[in-house]
Length: 367
Ligand SMILES: *Cc1c(COP(=O)(O)O)cnc(C)c1O
Image 1 (tube, protein in one colour):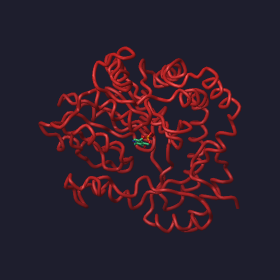
Image 2 (image 1 turned 90 degrees about the horizontal axis):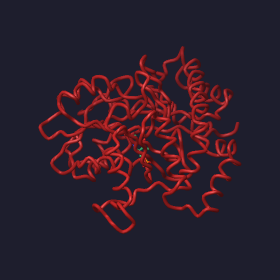
Image 3 (image 1 turned 180 degrees about the vertical axis):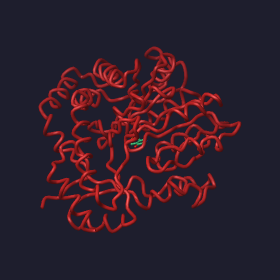
Image 4 (image 1 turned 135 degrees about the horizontal axis):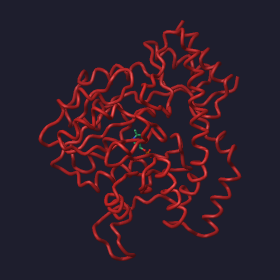
């Protein structure tokens, strides 16, 4: 049988090839290579998709995070609370501001920030909380926001995996001062290279971020402050603008594929992902859990089915963050999950027969 990749970017490209080629050609014909209308169109369209007034395009999801942190003035005297089971960018960018990352454990089974652990992690130095909407499900923002309000803390949402996700009928960016997105090719809405965005309701913050992302510039050679070059490439913006029009249809297909997987695993020992009652999960990854995770991974490999672990080593155990002085055992929920989670292939173009084939391969090992 044909190999099945974790995600098939080629299949998606072929389904929209003509539209994409026209979009790229337009940017080239107009030599609109920096800033300009293609960027603005996409910033407005994606902010509107998030039901928010402002979007600031960035060169990646990582620079989007650093841009918000820098615009909010996080620095060496501050502590920023986040979770250990995320992509390194969430924490790397906190460190880049000079602030100290502080981890709290996550909740089983969503694996999102545990609001009950949050309070104990707050000190007089705490300035901000960065919940990560892991795998495409928004964190339990109600209690997190109550604590943030009580303690006068900023909330920034890492929504790199949560395009179109909802919590109590609201999309990412409605819960914090800002939310950051990644358009890395493998994300739900992926560019043809690196790209990202910050969305916010705050006009002043948006203006500050626009300036900071463009060399702190207020006019061509007048710089208000020393900034960064974090601009979103207009070719990527034009591509993303084409793809955004298909996003809702793709999300429906993703969710349909998830339903089929869940049915096929219903009678098995494989733990399938939970969608909480007040949320709309968009499934950047379809993550199962099993004590036989390593055997499943090996079995799938033999059948040419690609699976991956998001993420195998929690950040508090990474060599890069040894100076934070955490130890194995500090975040038992995140640590146990890291030993049991496995992301199976999931993309809108994945066919039912392929899902059946993947599920059969998993069930052969677990039953
Ligand atoms: C992908 C990702 C990022 C970083 O985005 P890039 O566009 O790859 O820089 C940050 N946080 C999370 C949770 C991610 O999944």
